[in-house]
Amino acid sequence: MSKVAMPESWYAKSKPHKFCPGCGHGIALKALGEVIDELGIQKEAVFGCDIGCSLLAWDFFNCDSVQTHHGRTVPVIVGMKRAKPEHIGIAYMGDGGGYAIGAGHMVNAASRNEKITCILINNTNYGMTGGQMAPTTMPGQKTQTTPYGRDVEETGPPMQGPEMVASITSDRAYVARGTVTKYVQLKKMLKKALQNQIDGRGFSFVEILSACPTNWRTNARETLDFVDKELTKYFKVGELKVPEGLK
Image (cartoon, rainbow, N blue to C red; front, side):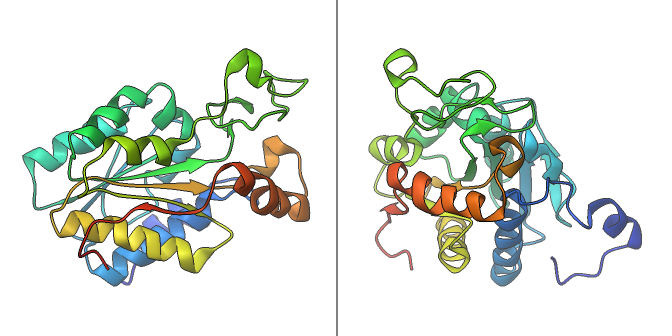
């Protein structure tokens, strides 16, 4: 993924990626890696990942990285950025790490306009632990803990993360929702999110609609259809907040 030469042992650990076949994490990480290279920030980047499927990315990039406790990726990267403001902090997590156990950290970092970039994978379930209901599970969606489908009257509606973040951040924040099925658009969003931090404006947040065919129990066509035709009905793809001057 990086243009910098890496030892064979690094390739042996990290290539190919360790995610399930059809998982969206690999696509999201490839887009992020290409953007890091295109911006030329490999030496300045610090990549933090959460517990859950996202932890499988801890050795994916040839840059400084840290794997945190569940839900604590945001404060770890905030602390790094405050101690070393010349570095580029990237907090990478799933919907559980960002919207459940780590929601308080996310909300406060966003409202304080911390100068970091948060990337959150929304695959509508807790993928690593067997596919339980997550904050983003769709209405009526069956999971291990909602075998008859999510009852929103009982559990409340799915979390609308970018909309929440956009409502509490300053005009210097960048907020967007992309999808692994629209790769070019996703890369543009990730580049803007990192550029916003590089320019010193403030908090950047990109939610990425992703796929989990293992727990969805879907084939290739059904997986893509669920992302493109079902997730996007509820989770609208696009930019929610773009600071003035960010291109």
